[in-house]
Length: 293
Ligand SMILES: [Zn+2]
Image (cartoon, rainbow, N blue to C red; front, side, top):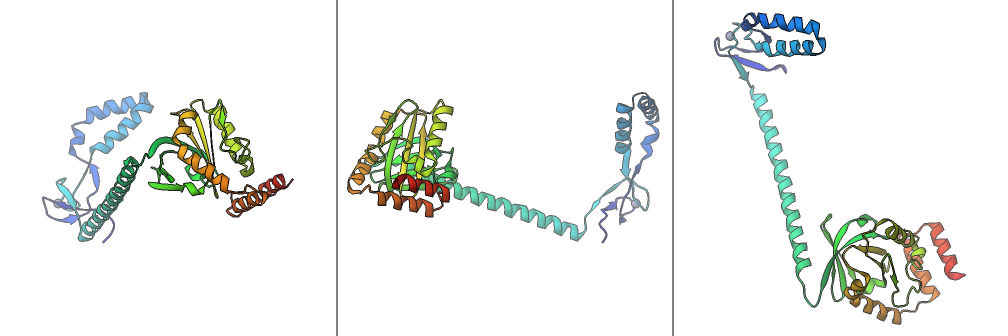
């Protein structure tokens, strides 16, 4: 079978290709054509395309055998088969998409339930991830934060994931705002940037936030074992944030008491960052020099 479309003639019942040709009505419309041609000569930009469209509209399919225009499309088994296959494939694709959507909505519902279930004084708030080493993929994304008794939960609605930060992994907390900086319980000492400069990241991020975003009211920096994250809140002030995160602060303080904040500790932490790829050779060397000198 050739690729040419087949037509069945209702007058002679033959099946074959049917070419488009001008049909008899052409002659009745001769006066219109005459005007159209005159118009086309005078205003070719409008007239010529109009003429072409008229010509194309006037053409009809004619039976190859008897010349009748009473023809209809005739599909071969092959063509019907192909059409059926295409339809089946489309249906499968739609089913797959629906299944994916169902799954996503189930995961979303579960996350939402998990977020909404408040027990033992858990608190939640909306925040934006401003940046951080190891948190780049969440940068500029709005997430929900839930503060539990022993962990922080971050709900990533884009990836439909829940990220858990056990308090044990939190080494330091800092809360600040464009106007003021509240120091953490004595670990980093210098406020924003002292340790941030070590990771080569926090200082610039915080400076940018304060300078560029007038809606930023509170900045929270968490220093984790092998990562660092900076959150921003546009809803609440630093003092309110301090209250919300009090359990984290208490834990970090207890942690800092038991932690020997020695040079070797700092070096080990740096080594960890370096090994995880968060620091370049150059940043690592500079940071080590800073600690040792
Ligand atoms: Zn015919």
